[in-house]
Length: 147
Length: 146
Image 1 (cartoon, rainbow over the protein chains, first blue to last red):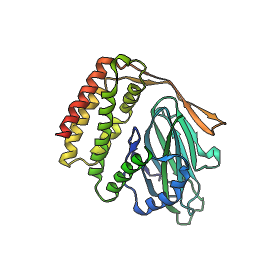
Image 2 (spheres, rainbow over the protein chains, first blue to last red):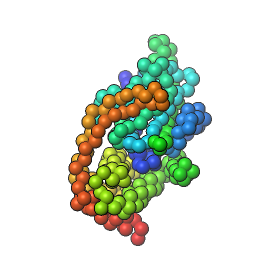
Image 3 (tube, rainbow over the protein chains, first blue to last red):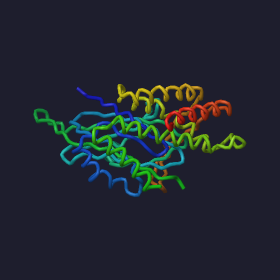
């Protein structure tokens, strides 16, 4: 049974907030996922939770034109590949990291501001009978102002 | 800019972590309102059409429902309940602005290794609605700073 967690987010000018971050996972997000943002400025939000194989999480965020973004999605090593998709408000898929060998980051920019939905899924090891793997999954956003 | 942004955001994160989500939400909302207030005050009405700052103010329409959800998650706190009332007043004005976005077309730019999400947006915000928005923001802000 898939569990959907909807994490409402607010991105304003350049500020946002978080909802329910597990403390242990926040440490993981800071240590492992934050460096993946590279030259992009972290938006200050730590979206991280313990997910189980096969579990999905959804996240909504507003992105603005004239800014460049990077999303970084990291899972603990004990987890299988983390798949993420980006959808627009009409549920059209704009990107999937499945076609990019489950890449951890995606850089993008928008011609016009809009709200997008990220769907993050922990894939499965496909080992029935084993205890499903679980671990921290972190979602981080970075931005820079378009030159 | 980077230092100020990160300091603000890390403070917000600290409040969340330390069991003060209502205060975190109020601090965030206060910052958002102040930014919106300053922006609306800066707009030169003689340069309204095609004004980039006006465009960015209109963009805040995309976030107001999420802002309300954030506040509603701390409903029951008297200060938050009051803020919800104020934000709903602002939402009434934002709801008068129509935003229509065309189909989003992702295009990968090899040179920058970045995907450009192409789309066009149309809005029907008039100077009259903008003035109403600006006045509403100023009125709500004045209740905060009393």
